[in-house]
Length: 287
Image: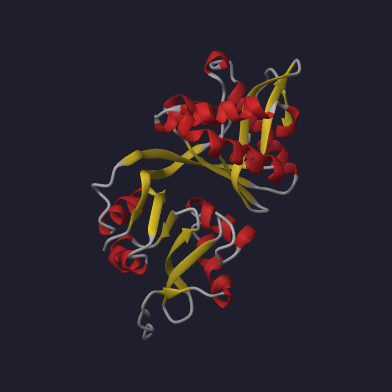
């Protein structure tokens, strides 16, 4: 059979969305950010998570793509040996971070000429997946509640502490964005707090959601409350809630070995490596 020659990479339109979704669903565990963004915000520029997408096709099916959100998150999903073509598609664009499969992030950062750009963080983290029928909900302290059950300022302080611990820097650098995030998470009902005796003791959430699969993010336990199983219980209870709502799978990437142990304890298994490359300030791609 003669295969149709691959077409040049081009900017996607609404007509391409069904084929994009089909392609990303074939790589769903490493495509939650672009899939969730597309489902909730579409193509466009009217929300920080709205995204423009450039695709390559074989004449009908999408064979690779790269997405760029309005906030500057670059999200690759393509064969690594095609990196030069996809990098050229976003030449001149502002990039605040690159998130995705570790190998794709590595080759893309090089192809974009950003290997010397100052970094806030460059993490290669274990990537986990869980069939929710295998979820283990540990016994322990606390019950889940919406973020509105906790003092907003406390949650902002927790988020600032998370950012400082993850990226380093002064708390003042993160405070305004942390306040916006907590407000957005509260409005979106995407996160939960674990409450005990009327006090919040941990936070968890979903940073990408589809009806059948969720991606965990924003997990935090204050240092003085750690090593008591609060985070794993909060995550497991939230996943149990998602399972009752129809979700059948969950994915996440773990920032530390203690976090990875907690996720393994509730049933997660590693499937690969996920990378977060965050620049100190937005960079212009220079192919």
